[in-house]
Length: 328
Image (cartoon, rainbow, N blue to C red; front, side):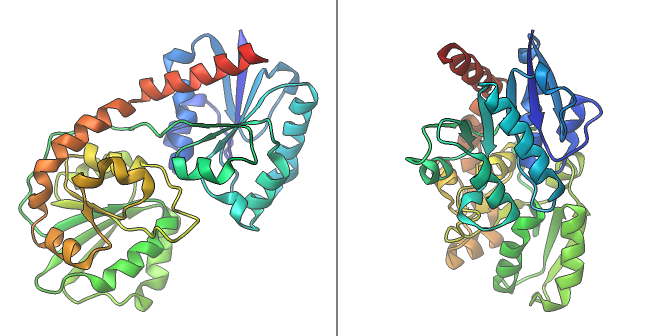
């Protein structure tokens, strides 16, 4: 039996614990390796490696911005495997190489021309070609069951996302429609909730917008989706740190069965006619006033979302391993 090890920035007691972590790109990508399709492999997931001699395939998950202690450790593991002639797989889901951050330095040091690099979007792949030879796209899977389409008649909306997305929400809030009362549920990480509370006095929030803060979790998100009329996903296509994002928040929003207003990231354009352009002031206002104008588009979007199941995407990872193993 071949052994696969994923390096992730967590101490993991049981492999299944990875699907409970708050970094989506790790939770929904590394988490695929806990599915039955990988039953013929021994899977270990952790920030450390107990016995590098037992590893046949080393996968590198997202390197964390705040874990300097992992820099030399992970670099050593990678060098050890490379010296043995092993293929190294990097799951590269952010534009790290563009920046002189700790993560940027790690990838600049670790990535070599012939490594296997897996990205989650066409934009990220285009940033890596032609410097790197083996770059694949495996998109993010949907992590919830597709819900029935909702037609809630209220002025309540939902934002959910990692705290790195909050700055786009802070930029959006001052431009909110002022013609009636609204409620906005914000679901994010503990760090994100602290950021909002610390910066709330600097955010020019209109008086007609009431904000409710909640910790993000799948159960909390599903519960909130039953109560609101739409979902907002603000962003910035000019921000190189984020314009390579995958489609995971958008397909999750559609799976929740709600109208969506979002930034038109390149990875979202397969759904271009199914959501409102949040960066078009007139269109966003129309969405806020009557999100159900977009309800008829949700069914079309959900039919597209169906192809991004965990099982489908897991087969792509398995195929990649088999193809690279046979080639070597």
